[in-house]
Image (tube, rainbow, N blue to C red; front, side, top):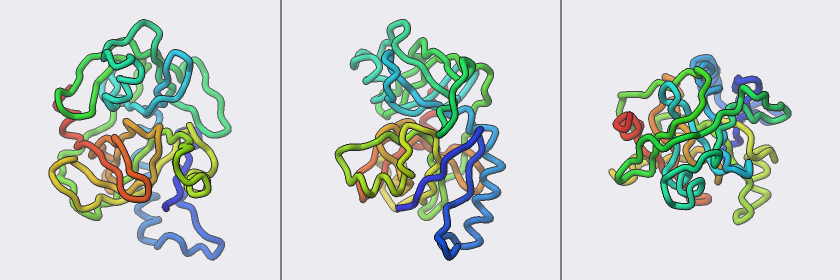
Length: 240
């Protein structure tokens, strides 16, 4: 039920507050303020993945020079399940913010499948990243209740409560936003349970540690009003 925070020119906004300014504790707002500064160099490296018809399919993020990571099921949509990309079949838009337009430099073609994880829902793709900074991966183990944020491009979901979605996502879908959350208790499979507010379109979103602004995982799926699942950043690093 946490409202997301939109980005503007690559900068995260403040945490939302009620009219009485009591929604978020001071300690959390201070931590968020620090996170905003640490994560800013990487916000512009998170893009909206689209197919040849410019339809929103998922989220991807820069993990190396000319390389992006996303979910394998995002690739399956782009490739018709073939895991091979035809020329001009996919692109990544690195801005796509509410109320802003994209320039040609914000859009890069996705040209090739570089690595497909044999078991996990992760792929590494070659794309035109125009020198954008790759994210920094964390080597720290996650613990229950660690504060995290998933940054990506949530899309409207007609199958779930539209009033809930409108409130949480500010009625703005398909644009870049950050969702605050916590690591939940879980098992070894999947790697991460979390409660960031996400919806379809967030597939492939990087999950950042609020403390370090390093990537601790990649979001893969969610169960409405229950929990979300992600994959450890270690698995992404192993593909590079």
